[in-house]
Image: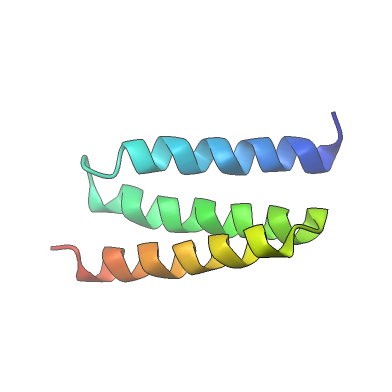
Length: 70
């Protein structure tokens, strides 16, 4: 496996775990936003710009949810 593939695997795994734990703490929402940024970077680095763009949007949505969460 290449370093880029391992990075992508880490990013997507982090997204899955932090999304699953969002109900436990608002900090997992922020962690999910960060994981989405990693996923976005992976998408752009591997040449799948639509994936990178959608993940960037998800990061903004998650950050907004973090700010609005009580």
